[in-house]
Image: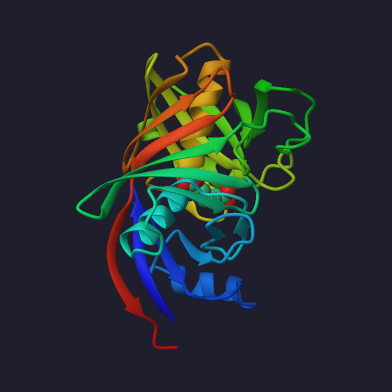
Length: 278
Ligand SMILES: N[C@@H](CCC[C@H](N)C(=O)O)C(=O)O
């Protein structure tokens, strides 16, 4: 299998192009190749496929073999991949996703190489039945959740994939390995959940640390950053645009009041290309 190793702020992916469709054993491939000791090592396996509805289609498989509906950092990598390789001459590209429809991306490039990508991530989903979260609400805010005797309060947001945003005093030093798996697998979330611990620094800057469904602690999460900004606006903590500061770097997120769409702007990087032996 030929692949390209890419990342968005350290959220890293094995990117595969040229297949007509997703291989039947894709879950097995993701588990094997994403392994950081016995494989290439990555948070996810990403396929760039043909699309009947857009310029390209993206499918993202988490490192545990589960498929996600959407991935904000991967979609920027896909845009960079197709632009840098001349698979499209355009800087405005449409990419179909599994759970968030067709998304429009704008590539900012220099000398034919993309460095920054702005993505129209669509409207956030706030209805509990659609997120899904097993409490009633639209939106679900300040909802109590208990894990091992510890009470947290979350706001639930879907960006195509489910997120719960939890405000804490010190997100940077939160024990992700302790709380992440307990929250990800809590019965309140029938399709599991991505968990964003957030500390608001000002009305346009928040620190966030993420535990991802199917991947564990990652250096960044694009959909998680969008969910965090939306949650912070709903809770009255932030303006409609600002920086979400992640372990791997910053993402600039805007939630447009008139269109209800969320826009994410950030970098994408190519590290190397390779071929697996088996
Ligand atoms: N890292 C991603 C999200 C990847 C999918 C996620 N783990 C899920 O299962 O929903 C991002 O940048 O958005």
